[in-house]
Length: 302
Image 1: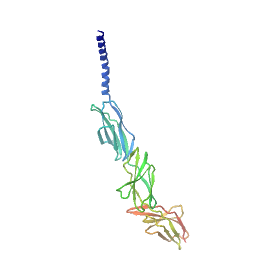
Image 2 (image 1 turned 135 degrees about the vertical axis):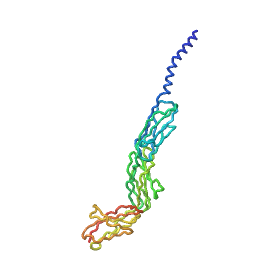
Image 3 (image 1 turned 30 degrees about the vertical axis):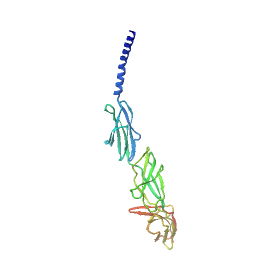
Image 4 (image 1 turned 45 degrees about the horizontal axis):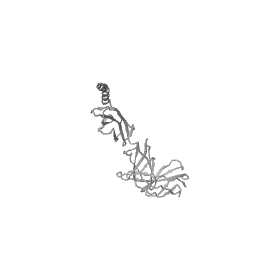
């Protein structure tokens, strides 16, 4: 009899606890799903790849499926459905304001929530600002600093078809050596930011290596006449002669010489002291590339 009463008491106790367990399980199934859509940046450049992620996921019934809608300037740009992982990579090919809206589908088949993250995308700002010949076989290149960039990649071509990477550097300048005098070289710069290589190159810039010339003779052989000669510069197709009235003052271009290294000036004011500099240039189709000026040299006119 005691055993029977004990068994009945145990059964009653289990029945008492069952209602407490049942609502709890039901609450876990119907718990609302919440999550965030995040990106590590709020600004990017054309050519960069970013990762949008669904994070802080809570509630719902696993397994989950994920999806993203990418909007550009308010219009649907791309749709990713049934993504097995809570993230998506996206590469920007044009400027605009991009927004990623995420959704999560749980085991019940319901789409839940649409949080979003927004990114402003602008053109690649990396530009070569200067190319100057250092000599017959070298060019010095300078480009602007990109905020957040930790490495730059310099590419070179001679035909705009085949490109070769010639340098990776954290600096914004590089001297490219062992070049061929008088040959036109094209350059572009890409960069890495946030650990991702930017696939969009900056604008193409070009330069021609050529030697620096020097004045070898500057005389006034007769009244009101000047004879100027200079050294031939490797890689040059012509020369520009500039004249001034003081060594450190302003100079004016007074002669373009093609194929020679001599210039004669007549009718110059007698008794004046004039200063001359010469720089080489290279003409390639419609483009003109300039070398460095020589050191100035003075002559007193007879």
